[in-house]
Amino acid sequence: MNAKYCAVLVALAALSLSGCKTTESAAMARPDDAAHKTGTPYDPRIEVDAEYVSHVQKLALRRGVYVRWVNKPHKRVVDQAEQ
Image 1 (tube, rainbow, N blue to C red):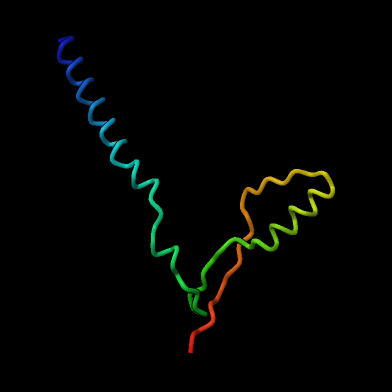
Image 2: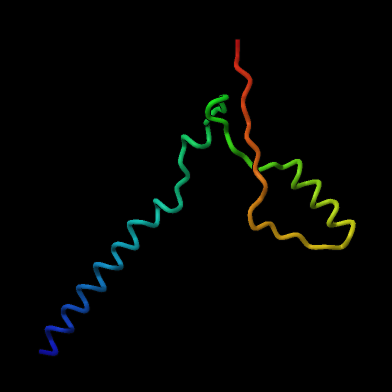
């Protein structure tokens, strides 16, 4: 009886570890379509508002305050159409 439990435990551990290994590359990969998306009036590209973040960081530095962004501010960007 003990040998059956040991065999099941080893099989379960092997299957669960192989599942973790197969998802590693998918978690590290960056989707290509999001990197090259162009913003249209009906579907704007959303990116971090770097100008505002920089302004707040400089102001905080002058006042001696540390800012930790939990959710950085975003802005919607519509690219100019090429004619």
